[in-house]
Amino acid sequence: MANDTLEGKTVLVTGATSGIGEATAVGLARLGARVGITARNEAKGQAAAEQIRRQAPGADIQPFVCDFASQASIRALAADVERRFDRLHVLVNNAGALHQKRELSADGLELTFAVNHLGYFLLTNLLLPKLRASAPARIVSTASAAHRVGRLRWDDLQAERGYRALRVYGTSKLANILFTRELARRLEGTGVTANCFHPGVVASGFGRNDRGLFALGVRIAAAFMRTPERAAETAIWLAASPEVAGVSGKYFTDRHEARPSAAASNDADAAKLWDVSARLAGLAAAAA
Image 1 (tube, rainbow, N blue to C red):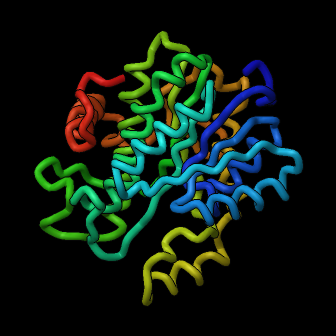
Image 2 (cartoon, one colour; image 1 turned 180 degrees about the vertical axis):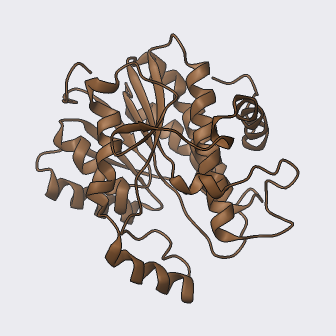
């Protein structure tokens, strides 16, 4: 990726039916990439693909179906990508959620942690062989400054002893940064880089899957938030810019490297989280 073009490159953006994901897919398509997008069902995927094509005329947009609350669905997505794409040069992990109340995934895991962290972890590991074969390649993950309120409680990762929505969300974003650090360490010398970023507080559909005062607050606050297009700028830059070719294991905000919290810089915790995540996702701890 010697310049800001993705002509001849293939990328996959998860959670691309709205918000940051859709804006990222549009931006990458405008740079010439063939763009795979994920949606929870085929109808949403086709509608999102048409919407992106309207904003990036002539773009090759390929919809995939995945429910990130199900590890079986994530595995099916990876198999579909393997079948349909001969190469994969960029993976943008973006699908995520924030739930006001504690819910469980299809695999019996706390839903926010399962989708926001284990979804990134499992899909990335399943697609690593194709990314390595396509090197130079990049993995870009949507994190958040909310990681600063997160806490990794090793004896209660599933928030069974008390659920506070923003704390649980922050913990999942903390996990995103630790995952990026450990992934980058494991990928040294492969030609595949891994970075993450804080998109800012974004006016999108995020958080509106809940009801009541929480959802109302999200709608009111949207008037003061940045647009998805503005929020997606760093994701697009990390995916395509020569400025960050070879840079790996870093956390960015507004296209500048930023310093995450001390908890997000703990390499021992990053390694431990990898092993715990591999077990929860049914992968060998030595994956990647």
